[in-house]
Image (cartoon, rainbow, N blue to C red):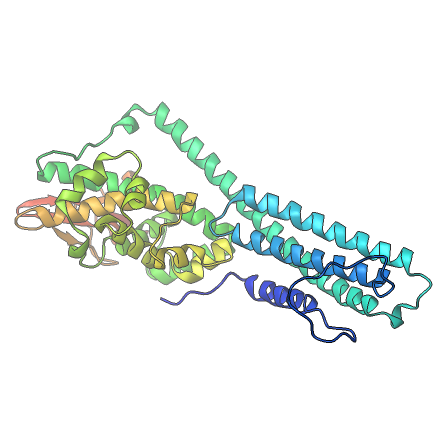
Length: 403
């Protein structure tokens, strides 16, 4: 899959190349000599103050270039501490360059600037400073936006944890390790997977909103005939999108019961990705992230495609967003493993938009919308698919359209 560099990269590399041009020292009337450095004697008449300042200027520009490269590297992976240190180093180098310019103006005021090569270099450098300062400002703005978004996600997670603590029923944990696979256990796993998909949809919608996405238009594109009872119910459309993407396709290549106990028995599933980045579960996470988060969406979220690039290179980015995705993906992967283990295999089914509601195979995601006996209702869309294991049916979860 095609990847692109971060938005600021093109202007950033242009700036670096322009710095490199300044660092190419042109010989002034001297014959070629050995490449071995020869110390200059400041008392030598040939060694003027102008040349001394020029050497310091070139040295400072080289240091500035190195500091900027370090700033770029600190973004992949994203490291706030390294970014802060690199930013300080760049500021320090810019201050040094400003002092050199002032020194030049003080020491060489008796010479017309147009007569010296240093004056021309300084003019070029002043233009370059404007470019670099603009790039640094853009990076700082992007970092601030990401910090605010991370704080928002952390606050939402904190609120979610508080709600879990207040609700005893949410404290229940499902242990799938060394358990006999029965339709009842599978039904519980479906419930946990549905909840995890919904939990991931929350930060996904938040990122779409702050990134300027038109959520109403996105919902209309997915479901053209559904009429929502309340505006807040449109969140179920994104649950539906996510469940379809995550559960679609044949993933036998990602299935291993031996690997199952290890993935489901560990507290943090990301540890599996670190210790075995090419395991069945790792490959599932990698492929499904690329399917669920299109590159246009990722670019609008983070201003770059670093997540995709890292995944496609064989790694797993340890970012808050991807960690939440992996926690959700674990339950979907567990469903895929369990569904292929039954004999006969568990069959997945969906309900089409505007089909008639049937209580034997469906349940409403909004209890208040469940039709009474004798009433009829149309299905807007399937939020979470259902499964059939032999004669056992695990009902799908649907959103019912307003008449």
